Amino acid sequence: MELADKRTGSWWKKFKNNRTLLIMCLPAIVFFVVFAYLPMPGLYLAFIKYNYSDGIFHSPFVGFENFRFLVITGDLWKLTFNTVAYNLAFILLGNVLQIFVAVLLNELRGKWFKKVSQTLMFLPHFISAVLIGLIAYNILSYDYGLLNGILQSLGMEPVKVYSTPNAWPFIIVLTYLWQATGYGSIIYFAAIMGLDNEVVEAAEIDGANAFQRIRYIVLPWLKPTFIILLLFSLGGVLKGNFGLIYNLVGANNTALYATTDIIETYVFRSLMTNFNFSLGSAVSLYQSLFGFAIVLTANWLVRKLSPENSLF
Image 1 (cartoon, rainbow, N blue to C red):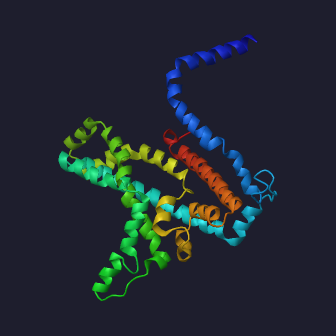
Image 2: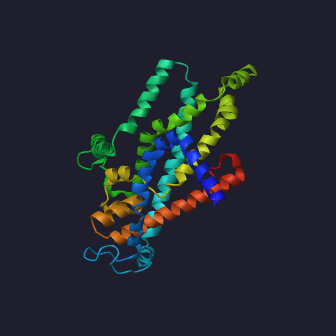
Image 3: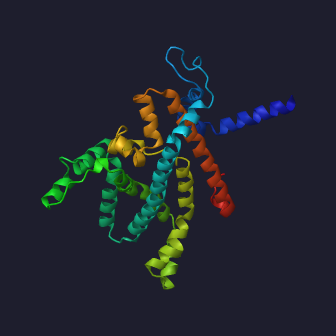
């Protein structure tokens, strides 16, 4: 009894000493409770054949039948491959470009030019996916697009871009990089700003040129930041950029399913077009569990190779 009282008193003391920080964290705690934990009973949808009249908890229980259907039809593997492939391209190419831009900005000596460059590269982040889709349509449209207008003026045949599946992985990745590189480079640029100038100056005195400073000082300094961002990104490797892909190609363009259909567009189509809530929930549950396993695996590998850079 006395031990329990001591523990209660210790807990209350810690709460009083950190109440300001806890109050600051309260909105985030409420957010996750409301939007992440309270909806969890809805996962039961993945194991039933949902119908409106019976509701979630009275619809027929079918076990893993929804998952079995996805595996048999081959949709699950195609969706997984497309989603993972796009995200790996976004993560790897995105981080490489962001590091390149951050290092390049750091090497610029003109303050005015540096500020203007940062602003211009940062602006695409604020352009909505809807507007990006509209711009892409005006460029790539078969009948009225700028691209085909130029090709026809040169005496060439117009291209049916919206019926060419193999063209869209390049279009989607390039569009993402254009939109995200400037914004993502800010984190790396901020990390570079934390680098001790005395180290850089000492390297310059020793005769190191710009490329040697970048290779042996700046890039190793950015390694922990890169690993942390990589681990965070891998957690969402099965969460495709729905807004971008949906507005570029739509969710119902069957001609492009082979290369553009990802988990989010499939779930959207299942819910909004086919009204199949059970299949949509099954895919979403698979997505969450797969992403969780990837984070644990990636963190385990990082802890083995570089323990000081692991998340936990």
